[in-house]
Amino acid sequence: SNDSYFRQRRRMVERQIEARGIRAPRLIEAFLKVPRHLFVPPGEAASAYDDRPLCIGGGQTISQPYMVALMTEAIDPQENDKVLDVGTGSGYQTAVLAELAGTVHTVERISELAETARIRLEQIGYENVHFHVGDGTRGLPEEAPFDGIVVAAAAEEIPEALENQLAPGGRLVIPVGGPHSQMLTLVERTPQGLRRREMCPCVFVRLIGDQIYNE
Image (cartoon, rainbow, N blue to C red; front, side):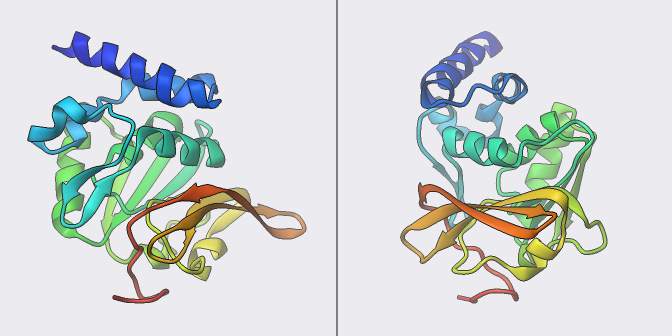
């Protein structure tokens, strides 16, 4: 029942997110609301609220809830913000952003994943999300600039196109490093230029596209 899932969500929020220091009220509200069990493969619903990433097929994953919370907190989306979500995947991060931002543009290179996520988010009732199939390393120049950009895949270097598409005061969060370990990195566009800050070690699947190394 929805009720048991709500209890699982509340436990996830208390033990995995609040216990690690993330307390922003709007963010907590979003994590209590988004039905994560609808974003995992059917056989995995029982594990949906576990403290770990899960495979969603095609070599892709749905990130650990805490990592989604940390990345979302880093860009701090406000209700009138326009944000870019690179690597739609299951659409879970997209849904969390849709709860918090005014408009979400999400890019996925695997069209089947994008379509599944689109149907899922429409069924749940999100109306402020725009889906794009394509190369996320190019960003979305036609929709730029963005107040926030979240990249759920790792690059050895930050794609310049994404930095260029940040609005003044805008923030980009991306895992930077080699295939096996990365550093979650925050880039902010300040009046003095781009400012980078390393947040914490992490492990993500690789970002693939024209603007960075290809497989």
